[in-house]
Image 1 (cartoon, rainbow, N blue to C red):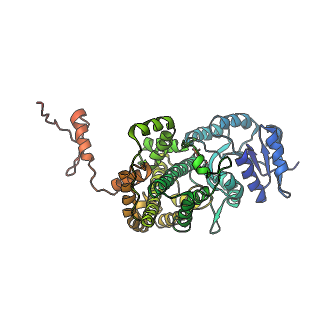
Image 2 (image 1 turned 30 degrees about the horizontal axis):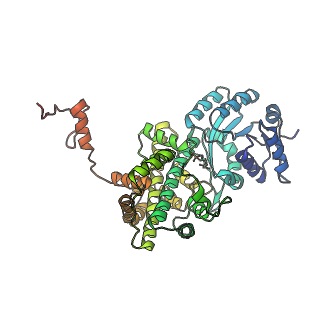
Image 3 (image 1 turned 180 degrees about the vertical axis):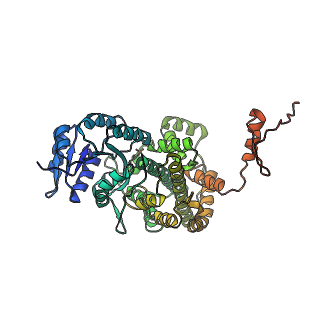
Length: 472
Ligand code: 6PG
């Protein structure tokens, strides 16, 4: 009986596309899904020459694979992963590898790694970014876990991943659940950038009064220079899409309530948990939450009436400043996310290679952008950089845009155009680059009402004062 090198459980669009990508690259692969329709579609949709087989039962699937088995799961995160593991692990043999390619929570991966290890099986968490198209043609792949197990997968992963300068957008992300963690932070940054783009859109639309054709032109120009990125590119194209029900552009017919599946929230929770400041990501999560309060927002807008917006004097100049503000606040969002990875790597012993993270984010994934080239060269010079803002070349870039960020933020505030992402990126920058923050006063207050103690600037030790109350 012919044996297959890889197995895929979960033949939804992502699973099927990733499977075809693997087969396209000359690897044989068997697929399984509880939905037999999907199994049928798999074989029907396979191109000639692909070594692909759909299997009817989990038993057939497992016995069709070469040992050690290398089984990729592409099923929704959470209970479905545990359900598959519950059914499949009794059929596996020592040394087999199960790779979870979904957006699983890293703590779930830790639990599953331990559980499968007790059965002498390997379990790996592997982030995959790039959406349906990326899965088919070349995603960015973030595997973590047992290094020996990773080595067995490496040639296949390098073959199927996106390429930038002939280098594959995949690399070992570290121990344990590092692969899921890196993907989670990728998504947190994705939330922040999407929030910032939406604010730039709002400023251009409501501030400068640009229509969709003009917005298309602006985003087209932005995408052809230093802001070239996947998210700017798709935004450009969104402005050209006509609606099928009306004569309007589709973007104007879409209800302003943003959805979320949870990876952004996890990133924020994690940052709070291990003490990392990532306010632009936090605000992006909470802005989506606020957007869902549509009915209340409508009510409040009536109470407080429409705000009057003063058009910028020089539209060309304004567009340029908004572009620079978007560029810099995006850079600051990456800085926040990457600083979370630095801390998490220490905290959880992941040993995440930051240089490789930014290298493999250059292509295939949702947050790919030319800016990552600069980060890559920064981490190449100093792999232990604790914050990307401390790099010399990056700092020059930041200095060249900071005025535009301040002007844009100021315009938004003065005109009542909500710009939470832009404001927090700037606020983070200002706090991070301030030698003496006013939290000496917070420490005094804490010690005043709760004897929480404080440290001094002129001598070692911990101090408490009996503060004089004016009521005494
Ligand atoms: C990717 C995306 C992908 C997915 C997000 C969307 O990297 O390919 O991040 O993972 O599109 O989960 O997340 P929300 O539904 O939470 O916006």
